[in-house]
Image 1 (cartoon, rainbow, N blue to C red):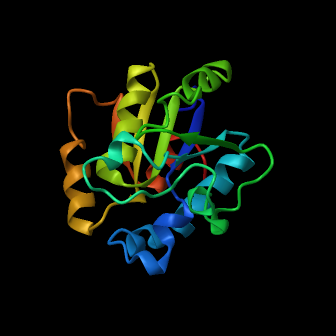
Image 2 (tube, helix red, strand yellow):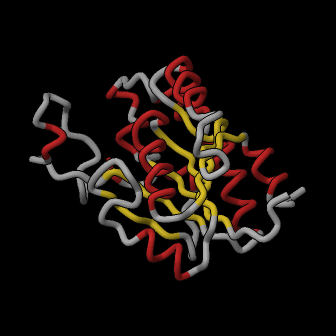
Length: 192
C-alpha cells in the first residue's frame, strides 16, 4: 500500500473538438468510453482532498505541429479547446491549457505539484501513445512517480492503446512508471 504518497490526477485532452461527431475521429468512441471511469476517479480524488488537474491541447492556428498536414484542432480560445461538459470541472480543480503534448510543457504544472508536495501523477485521458505517455514520462523527469491509468485512457484503437500500455508494464523505470487500473491505483492509495 502507498500510504505516504500524495497523488494528483491529471486528465489529458478531453476537449470538445475530440468529441465532436461531425469530425468523425477514430478516437472519439474510445474517448467516450472513459468519461465515466474518469468522473469516478476525479470524484474520489476530490473526496480525499487530492488535486484534480485538467490539461488540454491549446494550439495556435499556425502551430508547427500543423505544418505536416494535420488539420488544426483544439485551437486556443475556441469552444473546441474547452473541456467536455461531462467531466464537470469543479471549483478547486486546476485547468492548464498546454501548447504541446505534455501537460508539463510550459504550463507551470511541475511547480504547482511541488508546492503541494505531490509524489504521484495518475495520468488519464487521450491519447495513450502521445499526450498521456509524454505527460507520464515528463512527470518522471520532474521527479514524480507516474501511473498511467489503463481504464481511464484511450487511443484511436483498442490495439494501439493495449500495445502502448504493454510496452510500459515492465520496464527498468518500474515503479517510477507504472500501468494500473483505477481500482489498483485506489487500492495502492488505501482507498476502499
